[in-house]
Structure formats: C-alpha cells, structure tokens
Length: 135
Image (cartoon, rainbow, N blue to C red; front, top):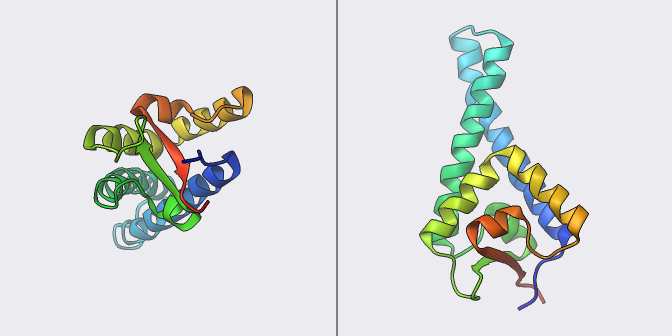
C-alpha cells in the first residue's frame, strides 16, 4: 500500500468539483427559467444543490464502493481507514461532509503544499488516508 501522490489527489478534487458544480448548475436552470429568479439566486440555488448532491452522493459511493468517489475511481485512488481496512460509515460521513465544502478542500490543499505530508486535514478528521491502487 502506497499513499496517493498530491497531484492525483488534486485532480480527483477537480474532477469531483467540476462534476458536482455542473450538475448543480444544470439542476438550477428550471429555477432560473420557470420561476424567473434573479441570477444571484440561481447561483446560490445551484451551489446549494451542488453541496447537497456532493455530500450524499460521495457518502453513498464511499460506503457502497468501499472507498471510491467518482474522481478517485477514475484516477485509481482509494480511501481506507488508518489501519488499512475498509473505510467505515462514520469515516465516510466525515469525509464526504468535509469534501462537499470547498473551504475544507482549499485548506486541505494548502496544508498539503505547506507541510509536504501524506495526510491532509480531511484525512486527519476522518482518520483515513488515500492509497494508490494502480501501483
């Protein structure tokens, strides 16, 4: 088991972010067209949908797929518990809640860059780490 490198984790965050923001903004289009809301409300609704969707969908994927999200599955990264076993529901919930908020992802990336470590803030909060499955 080798931990995933920072570049792959950044790409996984970007893939998840683009996917959920795209779905969130697409889901907000009916509010913009049918309810004739202002653009600022459309943006707020879209961000809200994206945050809620990313939390529940990541939580579902982490539990069902035993440690993968969309971005991590594409790049071959898996989240495991700190003892190397499958991630449990509590860890999946903490991880998906943290990853669904953009501020935690930014703090996590800054922590990675500043400290040059294998585990970030989200990893420490959820007591897990990311391993590279394609080695």
